[in-house]
Image: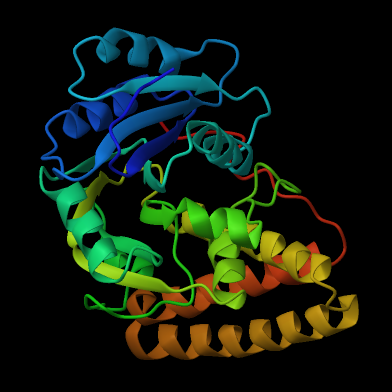
Length: 311
């Protein structure tokens, strides 16, 4: 049982599956963190591969010399939402005050946690704080790909309707009081983190952006292409449709809405291709893929987008 002082406890959580070298790089960047003086900090890796447990082995190798407590839990139920829920459960047992998610293919700046936590406290300690993610693209990728992913230039203090788990601080009190869990209905589908935070916002939660709390990600070539992006958007659409069904919205209503969005996006794609080629046509195309996924999700189509993981 880990022992901490009376200061609040913040646990950095990383979910991983068969990517030991990326996980190692991420943890080594955490080892260089500057830590807030008024905060207990620990790190937890949830290895979602109960077979090889490659992530657990990396943690065992690094934990003895790590500058703050580093532990690992193995989640046997395969799927990102299952691993994220295991993080919630583990932190509940630890009586942690804050949960911070980053991905296993990201690395952080030394002042990242200080920036993230300080801004959280400036807001009163009860808001979800979403940090920024700086993506490094392969040299072979067209410059407009980064615009497809993140067209909006956000500023610190901007209120968000949702966010992802790639760089986010969550007060555990919010999770407990609102009864929040990641949806495990399609455990290998995309978009379950967006749905989690959308539900949090709908229940009265506040999500605020902090530009200064930066993490970095090197995007592999296997993801930096329109085929991968299209499949991911389609999968996210399936997940979103099932979330809407679970919340009581009717099949016909979702389907009609999805088809309408699909038609609008398709027209936008065609016009974009005519006016500006792929640079302007790609964004509407991806929105069309998401709408098509929603239309299919109404009829029970399942997504296994994350069955195969990029290394």
